[in-house]
Amino acid sequence: MSHRPRKRFGQHFLHDPGVIARIVAAIDPRPGDRLVEIGPGSGAITADLLRCAGRLDVVELDRDLVGPLQARFAHLGELRVHQGDALKVELCALGGMYDPLRLVGNLPYNVSTPLLFRFLDQRGCVRDMHFMLQKEVVARMAAEPGGKEYGRLSVMLQVHCTVTRLFDIGPGAFTPPPKVDSSLVRLIPFGSPPWPIDDPQRFARLVADAFSQRRKTLRNALKQRFDARMFDRAGIDPGTRAEQLAPADFVRLANSG
Image (cartoon, rainbow, N blue to C red; front, side, top):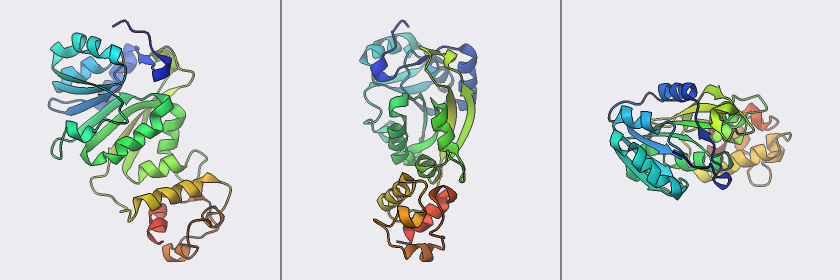
């Protein structure tokens, strides 16, 4: 399918057969899976997903790609193409409580974080997610406490799902080649939250404030909006820094307010 990647959509089309095969193997699509591909682009993995599952929903922002996708792949199975912005699509309407979605995609680097949070908001109807993202973003997503890569994104994802960095993908696997390396990451939402959050908005504010000035202790980073007594109630030393707390510690701290 001949289509020039568009910079304004952040398009980098995957073309390397070896990488494509490795990605599909990691996803391991099965007959009957309710797969949703975000941003299929030129359809590098679309055919394999549709052939294996027998049905596939794709969400594509570029309206010029919708017709070619239908023409090229519809004969392989039940293909439904939704033209629109994945930030606005109600994913749960594509599946159901007993038909959880499997999200797949090569996410545009310029909106990858908003997309991740949007998908997390709909995690109740999602079984798993496999995304290609900028390598350094995946490193932050999967980072453990104590390192410089561990931050707000790590905490906000890891309280809701397991995050596994699978493998790296070089720029040459894409057209045009991006200026950075990519990685494939797997996210599996928890069936029931291991650390229930009493007030999600308060939790999100606390995590954002804690990491806004990383060199500050939690006491100083949180003093503007949070009660100092909550440290005692949570059993957390206010002299520590944000990167030293595990996701469960942040939940305990937010719930103690």
